[in-house]
Image (cartoon, rainbow over all chains, first blue to last red):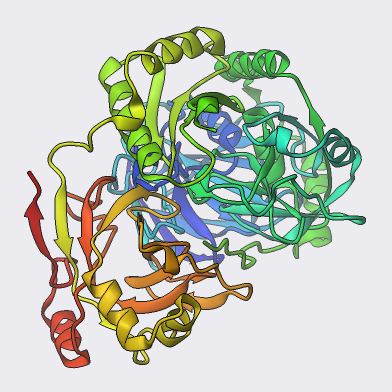
Length: 342
Length: 246
């Protein structure tokens, strides 16, 4: 099975994404790739294929798609309403998309980034080592109605599988560790940062996510004299007005605003997925503990395939899932404008 | 002050940063570029990639999988092998002469920038078009060069209020540096010239034409000459002349 996936219609921010591209940091290009990496691993586990295959990332809402040939699909990340020729589809599961049938993916019920995976992966041309669009750099473009996406050769055949998923779609506790400029914030400021309940601002995208809070701004000791230096994904930059921004996969490569800490890679998907208004808080963990957490995450990712189980087609539970549809249709169709200036 | 540097900082779980200073200086910039080349030459298996900022070298390593201490020791040993502040510039550098339209509607902040630098607009054009600056680092956006340093009177601050957007190819100035913008962007730097030079060419065999250490000049052209360059150029060079430096 391999064929073409046709985009009949789609939301404003649907792009091809994968693990992004490394090796271009010195040239000013960040890695990019899927905002919620775990979703790529889950899709790969559901379809029994490598996690580096490209999928569609859908921000806030999906679209309508039609396949030229029978095609296996999997749906992961932010749960969205999904139907196949008007029959409901379960999220976090694999399904057969029959040739000519219409797959409709609506608004997110919680979270921000949903993913549509196909057997064999999306096989668009590789651009500088990866297929993922990097819109802030000017690489690739958001999908539009009429686009046709080639798919790779699918080596699997099973569908109707699901896997248990950690709820990372409503904010919560985010683990952070010190970075190179943390000590430019005094202990009191660091403590206050860790005790503050932040709200995810509506301004957020693949470059960065702004956090709102009540109370005084956070200020570094030498706020104005800090020299521009390297940025890594997950860095929490304190902007000129004292509000934190978590810098995401498509951020700039360097910046002159101080960084108070950096988010553990394990928790970055939770930051990305938090819908506007979600409450987040940050907890410092020591480097050694952070290492242990990341090692555990890596090993649980590696064993995701073992957690895949057949989907129980219980009509009652499907109806239940659909009942969420109306609650959420409006979740931030998050192409909300956010730019970071030099 | 120099005795504090170079110093090594842990960058979250993403790698290590070797800082050669806490302010821009020519020797510290050269040290960062040379040290990056030295790390690349070591070909250490845990190093994913390296980069430089103005006065620092970043070594990307998965610190979850690799304990930092061992690499810190290797970096310290490498730091001790030479005086990085007197390292030579990289070999095979290029001099680019990039035609630039100063002022006019295409670059409306020339006069404002000249005033901030304490010179007339004519003098500003003369100084900026004859200055030979070096690429100090590539960053922020793909292929985007930070070049310098201009004479001290060009140590003008960034604007408090941002310019909403300058186009790709904009030549902007602040803090004794010139940048050519890769993409249209809001900025606090002042827009003094416009070039047709593309700093990121994703479809070319050389997507990033500039490298740290390259030298740049921005000779002044008239609006008519600039228009001719824009109409005639398909390469992305924007009429630039290049020459390999010995």
